Image 1: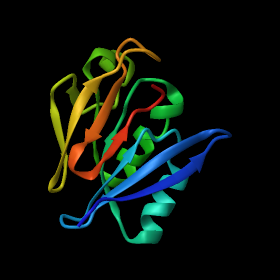
Image 2: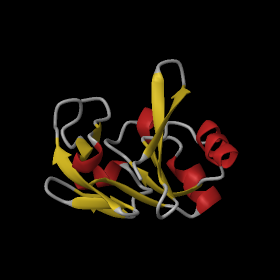
Image 3: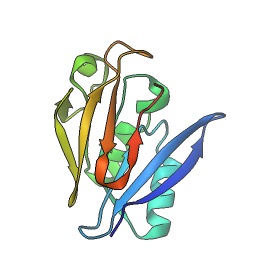
Image 4: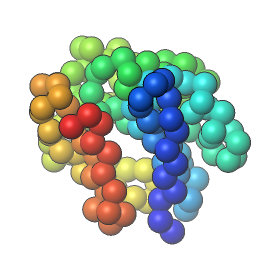
Length: 134
Protein backbone atom coordinates (compact mmCIF):
# COMPACT_ATOMS: atom_id res chain seq x y z
CA UNK A 1 0.00 0.00 0.00
CA UNK A 2 1.31 3.50 -0.74
CA UNK A 3 2.20 6.02 1.91
CA UNK A 4 -0.58 8.31 3.07
CA UNK A 5 0.73 11.90 3.11
CA UNK A 6 -1.19 14.66 4.86
CA UNK A 7 -0.29 18.36 4.73
CA UNK A 8 -0.91 20.32 7.93
CA UNK A 9 -0.73 24.12 7.62
CA UNK A 10 1.05 25.74 10.59
CA UNK A 11 2.27 29.18 11.58
CA UNK A 12 1.53 31.72 8.86
CA UNK A 13 3.32 30.08 5.95
CA UNK A 14 4.62 26.58 6.78
CA UNK A 15 3.48 23.01 6.46
CA UNK A 16 4.16 19.93 8.53
CA UNK A 17 3.86 16.65 6.68
CA UNK A 18 2.26 13.69 8.44
CA UNK A 19 3.22 10.45 6.69
CA UNK A 20 1.58 7.10 7.45
CA UNK A 21 2.79 3.69 6.28
CA UNK A 22 -0.34 1.51 6.50
CA UNK A 23 1.31 -1.93 6.48
CA UNK A 24 3.25 -1.33 9.69
CA UNK A 25 1.01 1.40 11.07
CA UNK A 26 4.02 3.68 11.57
CA UNK A 27 3.51 7.42 11.25
CA UNK A 28 6.06 10.22 11.09
CA UNK A 29 5.98 13.98 11.14
CA UNK A 30 8.36 15.85 8.85
CA UNK A 31 9.70 19.16 10.18
CA UNK A 32 7.13 19.84 12.90
CA UNK A 33 7.25 23.55 13.68
CA UNK A 34 4.64 23.11 16.40
CA UNK A 35 3.17 20.08 18.14
CA UNK A 36 -0.55 20.64 18.77
CA UNK A 37 -2.00 20.52 15.23
CA UNK A 38 0.23 17.56 14.36
CA UNK A 39 -0.79 15.55 17.43
CA UNK A 40 -4.45 16.49 16.88
CA UNK A 41 -4.46 15.36 13.24
CA UNK A 42 -2.68 12.08 14.06
CA UNK A 43 -5.18 11.37 16.84
CA UNK A 44 -8.12 12.25 14.60
CA UNK A 45 -6.92 9.63 12.10
CA UNK A 46 -6.09 7.02 14.75
CA UNK A 47 -2.38 7.17 13.91
CA UNK A 48 0.44 7.04 16.47
CA UNK A 49 3.49 9.15 15.64
CA UNK A 50 6.53 6.87 15.90
CA UNK A 51 9.10 9.11 14.20
CA UNK A 52 10.02 12.69 13.38
CA UNK A 53 12.34 13.48 10.47
CA UNK A 54 13.96 16.91 10.40
CA UNK A 55 15.56 18.40 7.29
CA UNK A 56 17.42 21.22 9.06
CA UNK A 57 17.77 22.96 12.40
CA UNK A 58 15.58 26.07 12.05
CA UNK A 59 12.94 26.42 14.79
CA UNK A 60 10.10 26.58 12.24
CA UNK A 61 11.07 22.99 11.38
CA UNK A 62 12.05 21.64 14.82
CA UNK A 63 9.95 23.63 17.29
CA UNK A 64 7.48 20.80 17.90
CA UNK A 65 10.05 18.04 18.32
CA UNK A 66 10.25 17.95 22.12
CA UNK A 67 6.50 18.14 22.75
CA UNK A 68 5.70 15.45 20.17
CA UNK A 69 8.45 13.21 21.55
CA UNK A 70 7.15 13.72 25.08
CA UNK A 71 3.58 12.89 24.02
CA UNK A 72 4.41 9.86 21.87
CA UNK A 73 7.88 8.55 22.71
CA UNK A 74 8.82 8.82 19.04
CA UNK A 75 12.38 8.73 17.69
CA UNK A 76 13.79 11.83 16.00
CA UNK A 77 16.10 11.71 12.97
CA UNK A 78 17.91 14.66 11.47
CA UNK A 79 21.04 16.00 9.82
CA UNK A 80 24.30 14.90 11.45
CA UNK A 81 25.95 18.12 10.29
CA UNK A 82 23.50 20.16 12.37
CA UNK A 83 23.10 17.83 15.35
CA UNK A 84 24.56 20.39 17.75
CA UNK A 85 21.62 22.67 16.87
CA UNK A 86 18.87 20.02 17.23
CA UNK A 87 19.12 18.74 20.83
CA UNK A 88 16.21 16.29 20.46
CA UNK A 89 17.89 14.05 17.84
CA UNK A 90 18.10 10.32 18.44
CA UNK A 91 19.60 9.44 15.05
CA UNK A 92 22.00 11.53 12.96
CA UNK A 93 22.05 10.95 9.21
CA UNK A 94 23.72 12.29 6.10
CA UNK A 95 24.28 11.70 2.39
CA UNK A 96 23.75 8.08 1.34
CA UNK A 97 22.16 6.88 4.58
CA UNK A 98 18.84 5.13 4.42
CA UNK A 99 15.91 5.56 6.77
CA UNK A 100 12.71 3.54 7.02
CA UNK A 101 9.12 4.20 7.76
CA UNK A 102 7.76 0.72 8.25
CA UNK A 103 8.26 -1.22 5.02
CA UNK A 104 9.27 1.81 2.95
CA UNK A 105 12.83 3.06 2.63
CA UNK A 106 14.02 6.59 1.92
CA UNK A 107 17.50 7.77 0.99
CA UNK A 108 19.08 10.77 2.64
CA UNK A 109 20.46 13.42 0.32
CA UNK A 110 22.73 16.30 1.32
CA UNK A 111 21.21 19.49 -0.10
CA UNK A 112 23.21 22.33 1.45
CA UNK A 113 21.70 25.60 0.33
CA UNK A 114 19.18 26.94 2.83
CA UNK A 115 21.52 25.82 5.64
CA UNK A 116 24.96 24.25 5.36
CA UNK A 117 23.80 20.90 6.76
CA UNK A 118 20.35 20.71 5.13
CA UNK A 119 19.20 17.24 4.05
CA UNK A 120 16.27 15.78 2.13
CA UNK A 121 14.53 12.41 2.30
CA UNK A 122 13.67 10.66 -0.99
CA UNK A 123 11.20 7.76 -1.22
CA UNK A 124 12.00 6.51 -4.74
CA UNK A 125 9.32 3.81 -4.70
CA UNK A 126 6.69 6.33 -3.63
CA UNK A 127 7.85 9.14 -5.92
CA UNK A 128 7.95 11.43 -2.90
CA UNK A 129 10.61 13.67 -1.43
CA UNK A 130 10.68 15.85 1.65
CA UNK A 131 13.09 18.68 0.98
CA UNK A 132 12.45 21.19 3.77
CA UNK A 133 13.39 24.66 2.55
CA UNK A 134 15.71 23.64 -0.28
